[in-house]
Length: 230
Image (cartoon, rainbow, N blue to C red; front, side, top):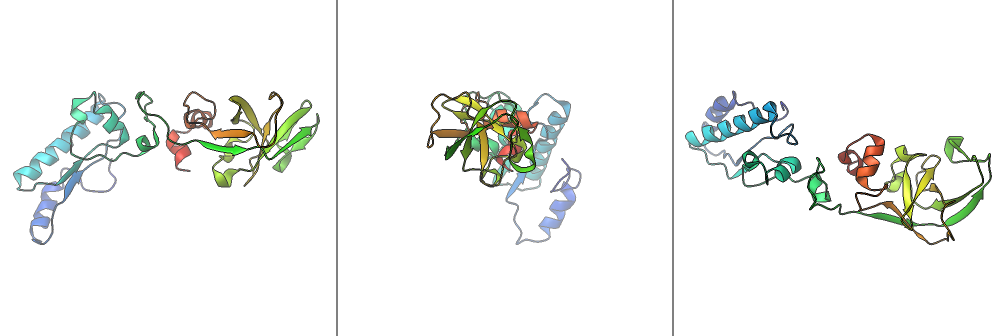
């Protein structure tokens, strides 16, 4: 990927320098796949080949790295079905720890986090009235809105303003207006007998729900990485 580290061509020179310092010790060999989601891509195959060459060269020069790792989450999950990915003795599991497969193919993974809050106030919004900063939402009909004590400071992405949804009793309720630092307004017009104190799911652990990280990331045209690590 031409980031940290050294190239395969520079490896011999690096080992010569290392041998000049007897107190230095080579602990491991690692690299990072740029396109682990596609194990058949010729560039991925080249990376795999270069890594194997580097490992073989180290061995031929008398080095036995204790730690050998190439795979992050994508490669680790693909290694079950792609033998060439089964290299090394450790892996760098990132987003899979949160329960996500970057390629959305592993049915055994389940998102680990769910974010909930409660309705703290219910109001009637008349047709023609606007709400929130900059008045970005104006009611086209009489509505019932719920006030939630949670905002972008707490993990509600501000980009979900006027387009995202939360779940109330399993029913999607649209976010209205700009998400504030610690307040979010939602449409409760379709919720029967809405009450203060009722639970609201901001981020659902069910990948199929509109408020799951997968759905929210798709809505925002980002990857789940972009939602987890904002």
